[in-house]
Figure (cartoon, rainbow, N blue to C red):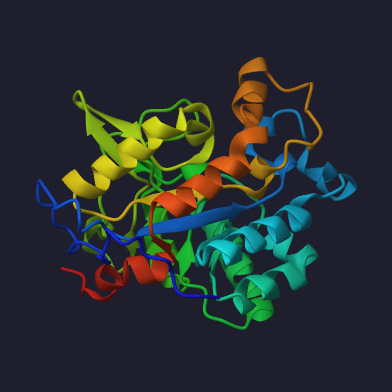
Length: 312
């Protein structure tokens, strides 16, 4: 894997100091390197379909994740981009070769939990078991330490802040599980927008990227918002975040988002079907543009300074 490609008008800025707010302006010729991330799960495992696809049926559904992942790995290789792959333990157990290809290509292997259960729907003991099982599977298969974690459906917030302590106790150095927006499925709109250590603990939380406009946080981190928003607008918002907030952004997507041929889930609610299926056919082309327009690297390298800073 080639080093992260840096546009000629950019220079790397790893991370702002932990618990510090960014400066108000950054020269346009000093843009940060952003973090590229992939949540490795299959289309039938998403929260939007949880009410109509029984977990007990997962093994009976033909998986598409490995073929989609091979396309993503090729796309990143061609762009010279290294990324972080937050991988479900359930997927890793069934596709160990895919996990090894992630590591062999120079990407960061991180955890998305084992069974894609929401963190805020589990007890602390259940959450610990899920986190421990996933990390064990990923480390055994990948042969590398797994220090990053992302909760399914960004499901860590004020109601289950105990999850940060569990993650640290189970060997994770950072989480990227909080989305500081208001949404019907997730979100903590009053959470900090920048890397911080919750309650002064040992774990670093790296929130999903938002742009502050009109007194509210607008999502600028990928997913369905990226597929729905006109690409020039998304690009302008991310550039604004990099310049005005002087901080690296975090982008995410899923392997199923580059797969317009996936089966449709007719039993799902109309809104869920729309969110899941909007602009799937355009996603891979949009990703190509995004990879060209910004500099990208793995989470652990983009935020290396913040990870190394001691807790206060």
